[in-house]
Image 1 (cartoon, rainbow, N blue to C red):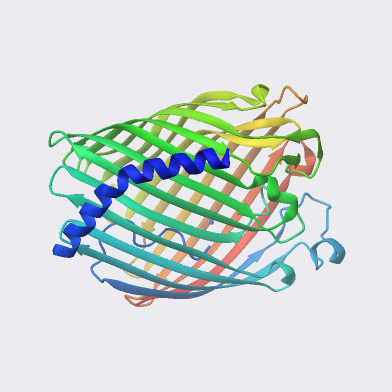
Image 2: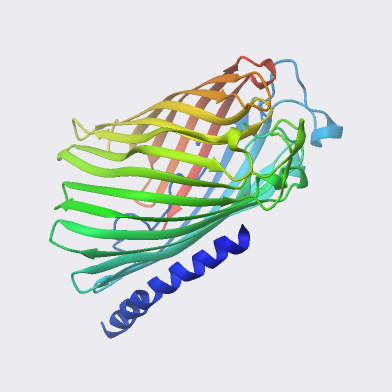
Length: 424
């Protein structure tokens, strides 16, 4: 499967490279400290910018363990359920518009020190490059990559060893405008994930996806894409254990192919509101485990509303199907609602809230009986203080609770954060 995916990637990229080369010739002639990817939104008036920051983060239940379970020195390298993390941040961003071309580079390093459980100390990174290219009026596209590595979260993986999860994504798109409003669009992307812990090697994967469709644009008010997307999934290591550490009855080959019909949209009903997201139908077929096949509706919508200059509300509605390799499930149906109110109290002081509720149903696998159901609730509040145009402080508190019909997956955690970030 890996060789087949690599061959397809080479063929499709080869078909896109002539367009990329022409665009380049034309250009020559003319809940952490980092909350979003820098440099991939609006054009920055400063070509080169830097960020630096420091933060403290305290967890009452650092490993998201159920009540009555205590980490031990032998298993976690420390004792006690709580811990404090010291986080640093160093970032650089380059954003340059050259005629019809736009070039972006960004990079961040985030060293993390655990005060009690030092075996989990690490340095996370996030690096990327993006080129928005255009050839005259009709031809346009993107070419880029994103490389990242960080410690796996403790809420989804039960493991007492440090696992560094590396995620890389390479992508290219090309489009041609047929009219001022309509265009043909195509794209390809390769996403890879690898894990440093040997117990989680079966989570490593290579996903090769390509898509074709049409885009309708009406000025800056509305944009709709109608696309077919195909994905070939390759897991180079056969699965021996589930994510709880239980031994599977037999090793499992999780290679699959997936097709999806999607509508992506961005729409501004008024100057103070915006709707963005996707809705569609997806179907996944496993190469050797047909009993794990699944299909269903997927959707995700962000609704932004700013009734006044001081208040803004963002609402996210998400319904998705995710693969999950447990003894009792082969995929998860997750439905979430997220509310993020923001209020500017004064010119320097702001408040940002978070309320999220998610239901996760682990649909049964024909190879094993039983089901699992989780309800996850998150509520939090951050206070933001702008000391100056370039220096911002933030203090926040967040409470997370997961209720499951399987007791070993219940947990609650209170997180308190303090941070200061400088942009220059």
